[in-house]
Length: 320
Image (cartoon, rainbow, N blue to C red; front, side):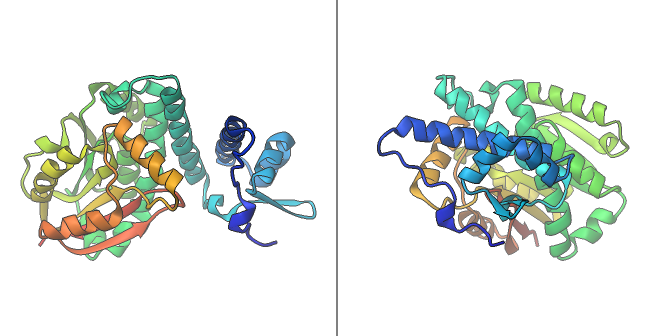
C-alpha cells in the first residue's frame, strides 16, 4: 500500500459552489480531529471500523487508503503513542474553535487569547503537552550539556506563556529533579492551570510554580538552565523587548528553546497564518528569522528541530 500522493489529498474545487467546497473541507477536518482523539485510547483499526461514515469522509479526502479490507491513515497522522494523538487532536480542535469564533464576528485582535473562551484555552493548552514531550525527547538530548544540567538537583526551567500548565507538566515529568516556573499574563488561564495541576495530583505537578507575569517583565539574572519561549503567542514588539531579558535569565552555557510557526507551503495557508496570528495578538516569525535573531543577540550553536507535520519548528541556541 503506497502513501497518498499530493494529488490524491484534498484539492478544493471552488468553481461551481465555493461555499459548499469549503464547508465540506471543514467537515473533513472535523472527521480527522475526532478520529485522532479516539485513536488516543483505542487501536486505529477499531476507530476506523466503528464509524464507517466518518471514515468514508477521510477516504474521500485522501487521508485513508485501502489494501483489501485493511485501512490505513495517512502517514502524516500516524503518531507514536496515545498522548501524541490527543495533543494533535486538541491543537486542531483549538484552531477550529477559533475559526468558528472568527466566523461569528467575535473579537480577535484587540484582546487576542484573552477573548477566547475557556474551552479554546484548554484545547490549546493540552495540545502544548505534545511540544513539551518533543522538547524532552528530541531537543534536550541533542543539545550539548543540557540533559546533564536538567538531571541535576536544583535545575530550573522557565516556561513562558504557560497557559494551563500542560507543557510545564510534561517537562516536570520528564526531568524529575527540575523546578519549572510557568508565567502567564492572563490570570484567568492561571486559574485553569491551577485546576489542571491539582487534578494531575502528581509529584511532578508539585514542582511547578505559577506566576502572573509577562515575558517582558522577567528580571532574573542567570537563573535558568532552559527557557521555553512560544514566540508566535507574543506580539512582535513584545517579543523584541522580551528576548534580551530572557537571554539574561539563562545561566552561562544554558539554552533557550523557541517555538516558531512552520513555513506555510502555499498562498492560502500563508494568508491564514497571518490572519490567525493577528487575531490572537501574536506574530508570524519563522524558524530562519528566529535563528538569525538569536545569533544577533550573541547566542551560539543555533539549530532547528521540526516536530510533527504542521506543528511548530523549535529553534534552540546557547548562551556563552
